[in-house]
Length: 298
Image (tube, rainbow, N blue to C red; front, side, top):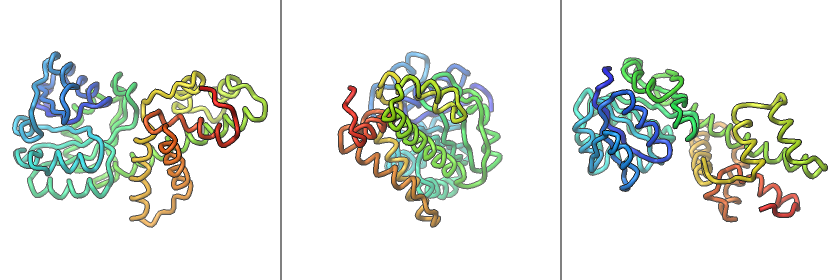
Protein backbone atom coordinates (compact mmCIF):
# COMPACT_ATOMS: atom_id res chain seq x y z
CA UNK A 1 0.00 0.00 0.00
CA UNK A 2 1.44 3.36 -1.03
CA UNK A 3 1.58 6.19 1.49
CA UNK A 4 -0.71 8.25 -0.77
CA UNK A 5 -3.45 5.60 -0.71
CA UNK A 6 -6.91 7.13 -0.33
CA UNK A 7 -8.04 6.38 3.24
CA UNK A 8 -11.42 7.21 4.74
CA UNK A 9 -11.71 7.67 8.50
CA UNK A 10 -15.02 7.49 10.40
CA UNK A 11 -15.21 8.53 14.06
CA UNK A 12 -13.39 11.53 15.48
CA UNK A 13 -13.52 11.08 19.22
CA UNK A 14 -10.65 11.40 21.69
CA UNK A 15 -8.87 8.46 20.08
CA UNK A 16 -9.94 8.96 16.49
CA UNK A 17 -8.62 12.49 15.99
CA UNK A 18 -4.97 11.80 16.86
CA UNK A 19 -4.99 8.41 15.13
CA UNK A 20 -6.34 9.93 11.91
CA UNK A 21 -3.83 12.75 12.26
CA UNK A 22 -0.96 10.26 12.17
CA UNK A 23 -2.21 9.00 8.80
CA UNK A 24 -2.12 12.54 7.44
CA UNK A 25 1.39 12.96 8.79
CA UNK A 26 2.42 9.74 7.03
CA UNK A 27 1.20 11.08 3.68
CA UNK A 28 -2.05 9.20 3.21
CA UNK A 29 -4.77 11.02 1.26
CA UNK A 30 -7.38 11.28 4.01
CA UNK A 31 -11.12 11.87 3.98
CA UNK A 32 -12.91 11.99 7.34
CA UNK A 33 -16.47 11.81 8.61
CA UNK A 34 -17.92 12.27 12.07
CA UNK A 35 -21.58 11.91 12.98
CA UNK A 36 -21.53 15.22 14.87
CA UNK A 37 -19.87 18.34 13.48
CA UNK A 38 -16.84 19.96 15.07
CA UNK A 39 -14.03 17.47 15.70
CA UNK A 40 -13.04 17.38 12.03
CA UNK A 41 -11.94 21.04 11.94
CA UNK A 42 -8.31 20.47 12.91
CA UNK A 43 -7.90 17.61 10.44
CA UNK A 44 -9.49 19.69 7.67
CA UNK A 45 -7.02 22.48 8.37
CA UNK A 46 -4.21 19.91 8.16
CA UNK A 47 -5.32 18.77 4.72
CA UNK A 48 -8.07 16.17 5.17
CA UNK A 49 -11.22 16.24 3.05
CA UNK A 50 -14.60 16.12 4.80
CA UNK A 51 -17.38 13.72 3.81
CA UNK A 52 -21.01 14.33 4.68
CA UNK A 53 -21.79 10.63 5.19
CA UNK A 54 -20.10 7.25 5.43
CA UNK A 55 -21.34 6.47 1.92
CA UNK A 56 -19.77 9.62 0.46
CA UNK A 57 -16.51 8.75 2.20
CA UNK A 58 -16.61 5.13 1.02
CA UNK A 59 -16.98 6.18 -2.61
CA UNK A 60 -13.59 7.94 -2.41
CA UNK A 61 -11.53 5.48 -0.36
CA UNK A 62 -9.57 2.32 -1.05
CA UNK A 63 -9.24 1.74 2.68
CA UNK A 64 -11.86 2.72 5.26
CA UNK A 65 -11.14 2.87 9.00
CA UNK A 66 -13.70 3.39 11.76
CA UNK A 67 -13.19 4.22 15.43
CA UNK A 68 -16.68 4.52 16.85
CA UNK A 69 -18.59 4.10 20.08
CA UNK A 70 -20.61 0.88 20.12
CA UNK A 71 -22.50 -1.88 18.30
CA UNK A 72 -25.31 0.45 17.19
CA UNK A 73 -22.85 2.93 15.68
CA UNK A 74 -21.05 0.09 13.88
CA UNK A 75 -24.31 -1.14 12.36
CA UNK A 76 -25.25 2.39 11.30
CA UNK A 77 -21.98 3.35 9.61
CA UNK A 78 -21.68 0.03 7.78
CA UNK A 79 -25.20 -1.04 6.83
CA UNK A 80 -27.34 2.01 7.57
CA UNK A 81 -29.16 4.09 4.97
CA UNK A 82 -25.95 5.97 4.11
CA UNK A 83 -23.55 3.30 5.30
CA UNK A 84 -20.27 2.38 3.70
CA UNK A 85 -21.62 -0.88 2.27
CA UNK A 86 -24.00 1.11 0.05
CA UNK A 87 -21.11 2.78 -1.78
CA UNK A 88 -17.80 0.97 -1.24
CA UNK A 89 -16.43 -0.73 -4.33
CA UNK A 90 -15.61 -4.44 -4.27
CA UNK A 91 -12.01 -4.85 -3.19
CA UNK A 92 -12.19 -2.02 -0.65
CA UNK A 93 -10.61 -2.84 2.71
CA UNK A 94 -12.65 -1.96 5.78
CA UNK A 95 -10.87 -1.82 9.16
CA UNK A 96 -12.91 -1.35 12.33
CA UNK A 97 -10.83 -0.33 15.36
CA UNK A 98 -13.72 0.10 17.80
CA UNK A 99 -14.52 -1.91 20.92
CA UNK A 100 -17.67 -3.81 20.00
CA UNK A 101 -19.19 -7.22 20.60
CA UNK A 102 -18.06 -10.30 18.68
CA UNK A 103 -21.69 -10.78 17.60
CA UNK A 104 -21.99 -7.35 16.01
CA UNK A 105 -18.60 -7.80 14.39
CA UNK A 106 -19.58 -11.17 12.92
CA UNK A 107 -22.67 -9.58 11.32
CA UNK A 108 -20.47 -6.95 9.70
CA UNK A 109 -18.11 -9.67 8.48
CA UNK A 110 -20.98 -11.48 6.76
CA UNK A 111 -22.19 -8.32 5.03
CA UNK A 112 -18.66 -7.38 3.98
CA UNK A 113 -18.26 -10.78 2.33
CA UNK A 114 -21.54 -10.30 0.47
CA UNK A 115 -20.27 -6.95 -0.82
CA UNK A 116 -16.84 -8.24 -1.81
CA UNK A 117 -15.16 -6.04 0.80
CA UNK A 118 -12.21 -7.08 2.95
CA UNK A 119 -12.83 -6.75 6.68
CA UNK A 120 -10.36 -6.51 9.54
CA UNK A 121 -11.31 -6.38 13.19
CA UNK A 122 -8.56 -4.20 14.64
CA UNK A 123 -9.33 -2.87 18.14
CA UNK A 124 -6.50 -1.17 19.98
CA UNK A 125 -4.86 -1.40 23.37
CA UNK A 126 -3.86 1.94 24.84
CA UNK A 127 -5.63 5.15 25.77
CA UNK A 128 -5.67 8.71 24.51
CA UNK A 129 -2.09 9.49 25.56
CA UNK A 130 -0.75 6.58 23.50
CA UNK A 131 -3.00 7.48 20.57
CA UNK A 132 -1.47 10.96 20.59
CA UNK A 133 2.09 9.62 20.59
CA UNK A 134 1.33 6.90 18.02
CA UNK A 135 2.29 4.10 20.39
CA UNK A 136 -0.95 2.15 20.72
CA UNK A 137 -1.02 -1.59 20.04
CA UNK A 138 -3.30 -2.97 17.32
CA UNK A 139 -4.95 -6.39 17.66
CA UNK A 140 -6.08 -7.52 14.21
CA UNK A 141 -8.03 -10.52 12.96
CA UNK A 142 -9.44 -11.38 9.56
CA UNK A 143 -7.80 -12.58 6.37
CA UNK A 144 -4.01 -12.63 6.59
CA UNK A 145 -3.78 -10.87 3.21
CA UNK A 146 -5.96 -8.04 4.49
CA UNK A 147 -3.73 -7.67 7.55
CA UNK A 148 -0.65 -7.44 5.35
CA UNK A 149 -2.38 -4.84 3.19
CA UNK A 150 -3.27 -2.82 6.30
CA UNK A 151 0.18 -2.88 7.90
CA UNK A 152 1.29 0.54 6.52
CA UNK A 153 -1.83 2.09 8.07
CA UNK A 154 -1.10 0.44 11.40
CA UNK A 155 2.57 1.40 11.27
CA UNK A 156 1.61 5.06 10.88
CA UNK A 157 -0.37 5.13 14.14
CA UNK A 158 0.82 2.25 16.33
CA UNK A 159 3.93 0.92 18.02
CA UNK A 160 3.00 -2.70 17.36
CA UNK A 161 0.36 -4.65 15.48
CA UNK A 162 -0.50 -8.29 16.15
CA UNK A 163 -2.24 -10.65 13.73
CA UNK A 164 -4.28 -12.88 16.05
CA UNK A 165 -6.56 -14.98 13.85
CA UNK A 166 -8.96 -15.24 10.95
CA UNK A 167 -12.24 -14.53 12.77
CA UNK A 168 -13.37 -12.61 15.87
CA UNK A 169 -10.26 -13.34 17.93
CA UNK A 170 -9.26 -9.67 18.11
CA UNK A 171 -12.61 -8.79 19.66
CA UNK A 172 -12.21 -11.37 22.42
CA UNK A 173 -8.64 -10.31 23.19
CA UNK A 174 -9.62 -6.63 23.36
CA UNK A 175 -12.49 -7.38 25.75
CA UNK A 176 -10.22 -9.60 27.87
CA UNK A 177 -7.71 -6.76 28.16
CA UNK A 178 -10.36 -4.21 29.09
CA UNK A 179 -11.74 -6.58 31.69
CA UNK A 180 -8.28 -6.80 33.23
CA UNK A 181 -7.85 -3.02 33.13
CA UNK A 182 -11.12 -2.45 34.99
CA UNK A 183 -10.48 -5.15 37.55
CA UNK A 184 -6.90 -3.99 38.14
CA UNK A 185 -8.10 -0.49 39.01
CA UNK A 186 -10.81 -1.97 41.24
CA UNK A 187 -8.22 -4.07 43.10
CA UNK A 188 -5.81 -1.15 43.29
CA UNK A 189 -8.55 1.02 44.81
CA UNK A 190 -9.43 -1.60 47.41
CA UNK A 191 -5.76 -2.10 48.30
CA UNK A 192 -5.17 1.63 48.77
CA UNK A 193 -8.21 2.03 51.03
CA UNK A 194 -7.26 -1.10 52.99
CA UNK A 195 -3.76 0.26 53.62
CA UNK A 196 -5.05 3.69 54.58
CA UNK A 197 -7.50 2.19 57.05
CA UNK A 198 -4.50 0.49 58.62
CA UNK A 199 -2.80 3.83 59.13
CA UNK A 200 -0.60 4.00 56.02
CA UNK A 201 -0.28 7.39 54.32
CA UNK A 202 -1.66 7.36 50.77
CA UNK A 203 1.57 8.69 49.27
CA UNK A 204 3.48 5.89 50.97
CA UNK A 205 1.31 3.06 49.67
CA UNK A 206 1.34 4.55 46.17
CA UNK A 207 5.12 4.93 46.20
CA UNK A 208 5.50 1.29 47.23
CA UNK A 209 3.00 0.09 44.61
CA UNK A 210 4.99 1.80 41.89
CA UNK A 211 8.22 0.03 42.86
CA UNK A 212 6.94 -3.35 44.03
CA UNK A 213 6.31 -6.70 42.38
CA UNK A 214 2.77 -5.62 41.43
CA UNK A 215 4.01 -2.59 39.45
CA UNK A 216 2.89 -2.51 35.81
CA UNK A 217 2.40 0.09 33.08
CA UNK A 218 -1.28 0.36 34.04
CA UNK A 219 -0.57 0.73 37.76
CA UNK A 220 2.10 3.31 36.98
CA UNK A 221 -0.24 5.25 34.72
CA UNK A 222 -2.84 5.55 37.47
CA UNK A 223 -0.53 6.35 40.41
CA UNK A 224 -0.33 10.11 39.92
CA UNK A 225 -4.05 10.65 39.19
CA UNK A 226 -4.83 8.66 42.33
CA UNK A 227 -2.30 10.69 44.32
CA UNK A 228 -3.84 13.94 43.05
CA UNK A 229 -7.43 12.63 43.18
CA UNK A 230 -7.74 13.58 39.54
CA UNK A 231 -10.80 11.80 38.18
CA UNK A 232 -11.06 13.70 34.91
CA UNK A 233 -12.01 11.02 32.39
CA UNK A 234 -9.41 9.40 30.19
CA UNK A 235 -11.89 6.49 30.10
CA UNK A 236 -15.16 7.06 31.92
CA UNK A 237 -17.05 4.79 34.26
CA UNK A 238 -19.89 4.61 31.72
CA UNK A 239 -17.48 3.47 29.04
CA UNK A 240 -16.05 0.81 31.33
CA UNK A 241 -19.57 -0.37 32.22
CA UNK A 242 -20.36 -0.68 28.51
CA UNK A 243 -17.24 -2.77 27.92
CA UNK A 244 -18.02 -5.05 30.88
CA UNK A 245 -21.49 -5.56 29.40
CA UNK A 246 -19.82 -6.68 26.17
CA UNK A 247 -17.53 -9.01 28.13
CA UNK A 248 -20.37 -10.60 30.09
CA UNK A 249 -22.58 -10.91 27.01
CA UNK A 250 -19.85 -12.72 25.10
CA UNK A 251 -19.13 -14.90 28.13
CA UNK A 252 -22.76 -16.01 28.30
CA UNK A 253 -22.60 -17.15 24.70
CA UNK A 254 -19.49 -19.23 25.33
CA UNK A 255 -20.74 -20.50 28.71
CA UNK A 256 -17.71 -18.94 30.42
CA UNK A 257 -18.25 -18.05 34.10
CA UNK A 258 -16.82 -14.65 35.06
CA UNK A 259 -17.84 -14.15 38.70
CA UNK A 260 -15.30 -11.42 39.47
CA UNK A 261 -16.17 -9.45 36.35
CA UNK A 262 -19.88 -9.72 37.17
CA UNK A 263 -19.30 -8.30 40.65
CA UNK A 264 -17.14 -5.41 39.41
CA UNK A 265 -19.79 -4.61 36.78
CA UNK A 266 -22.25 -4.02 39.62
CA UNK A 267 -19.78 -1.60 41.18
CA UNK A 268 -19.73 0.42 37.94
CA UNK A 269 -23.53 0.60 38.25
CA UNK A 270 -23.20 1.85 41.81
CA UNK A 271 -20.78 4.54 40.70
CA UNK A 272 -23.06 5.67 37.88
CA UNK A 273 -26.05 5.78 40.23
CA UNK A 274 -24.05 7.94 42.64
CA UNK A 275 -22.97 10.50 40.07
CA UNK A 276 -19.56 9.18 38.98
CA UNK A 277 -20.60 7.89 35.58
CA UNK A 278 -18.75 10.59 33.67
CA UNK A 279 -15.66 10.52 35.87
CA UNK A 280 -12.67 8.33 35.14
CA UNK A 281 -13.23 4.74 36.23
CA UNK A 282 -10.44 5.37 38.75
CA UNK A 283 -13.18 7.01 40.83
CA UNK A 284 -13.81 3.43 42.03
CA UNK A 285 -11.59 4.44 44.95
CA UNK A 286 -14.23 6.93 46.13
CA UNK A 287 -16.81 4.17 46.31
CA UNK A 288 -14.44 2.08 48.40
CA UNK A 289 -13.79 5.05 50.70
CA UNK A 290 -17.52 5.50 51.22
CA UNK A 291 -18.06 1.79 51.92
CA UNK A 292 -15.18 1.93 54.43
CA UNK A 293 -16.63 4.89 56.31
CA UNK A 294 -13.82 7.23 55.33
CA UNK A 295 -14.54 10.96 55.18
CA UNK A 296 -14.86 12.47 51.74
CA UNK A 297 -11.57 13.96 50.53
CA UNK A 298 -12.94 15.95 47.60
